[in-house]
Length: 175
Image (cartoon, rainbow, N blue to C red; front, top):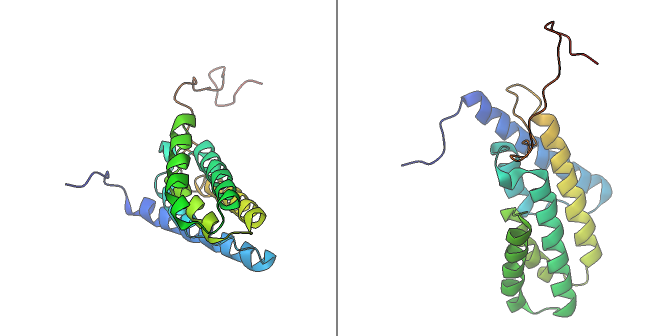
């Protein structure tokens, strides 16, 4: 039994195109800036952002917040315990605990502490790299989801009322 809903092929094509454009944009930016922006977790982020934009894990606060928290945990762990491979486990656990507690879970960000421990001494680069790449992917997701077939992204917060324009019965909203 499959748990994913059946969707139109056009939606699958758009999701795939969004992922291609996202990774292509990050790769091009990496080439131009010489920053190591093309990191493995971003592939998983592309799948979530473009394939499942309505899910909580794809929302900007989760993506940015998850990467920010994971990068801080990873960089601090790498600075305090340089070269200690075994610290990847508690760092990932602490990252998950923090993401769940703050309600900013983004699973691909869980790989960041592992990356940080593999790149000791390169903390500032990792921090800048992930945040630039993350913001770039989010911006592209907002743009791509406005193209047909259109998807609402970011999703409206479930606790906030949906605002609709006030009209006088004509097609033009009142100012």
